[in-house]
Image (cartoon, rainbow, N blue to C red; front, side):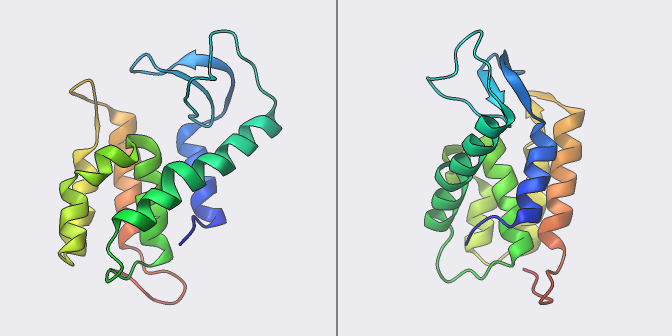
Length: 153
């Protein structure tokens, strides 16, 4: 599966776009729509086109490929479920998702239990972050919303 255009737009909205490198809440150098990596250095500036290109690449390598590999092939995901999971993975990373209770419950076909696990990922450095909580509530809502075909977990 791939992130839908609506899913991408949502992630971009959650992340915001900053065209000059900055340190995020955890002190990690970041640019564009939450892009990180060794090429992000103090003083780096991008154009919007560079931020969009990085987002396109990040969605494939940081989200779609890991999700498609981690979610069992016998789990049927709606587009909304995939988009919500994609937003979470974009933010917390595939490694954290791989070891999560959310993934374990999803693999056990417990969509409601998995949906409720979105709300666990609301902290920065161990402290509840209101912005993250709002994001997780929205991701949970999307996860549980039937898609155009009426499919929901």
